[in-house]
Image (cartoon, rainbow, N blue to C red):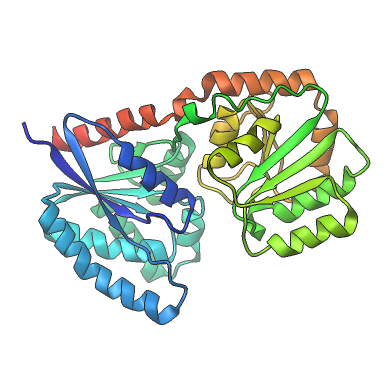
Length: 352
């Protein structure tokens, strides 16, 4: 029995980003009913002319890929703004060739994108959402928001949480019981709240048992590194790490922090949970579905540095350990095996 072909359209690394990592992980998908093929929708170039040329050429490449792959279902991974505009074109092509289409929205700012759009663009967005056979969002709360905002049929909206290979982190549980080692991993830009982490470190400078580890690179790296050196902060700027080097830093930490101003469903929080860390974050995107106060960690409003500082000071080692153990024991719901099952169910509904 031949397998049904599913074409996955979205960004593949490089560069490294949440959606690109998600797409890369899908290469490990296994099924006796479905076979995935991939189409990269992005270019590494930052040159505007090259990017514009790539977008035009990619439309023709997409048509060729769609026809040659004989895909019956196209699974488009998208976000807001420019990413969605490109996805709209791909969706129209898919429907022209009478194939089924899943629109998978990874952005935590999609509602903002819709609100910021002109009336004609909003009409176009609604038309695209309704043209898709299924619209996938990352959490139940986002499903409720989409039903309310876009008046979509509940049967069309599906929830598929993000995932990682949690087993890669099973040996990363910290054994420290007399230090609060707080880890951040991600792109160093304003939206991630990294400047707020430096402000926290300034206020906690005199506490020898508190240390911050920052993994990542980005436009703010030099600025943040200069601040750390100028104020002699308990912060280690570790740069971009991967593989065993990255896991070694995870093993040092018992608290994970992500004070973002916007998110979708951050893979980094799942990584922290899989490593047995308690989580400190903000109530943005799908994070409130992942972190409940006193169970997986605590949430504070983005930009509220004082609240984060007070929380870090007041947390007992026992509480950190208990929340970390809960996360380690329950992170299976975000494991790739669960995603594999969720996707098979998604595709079954379209092919039945």
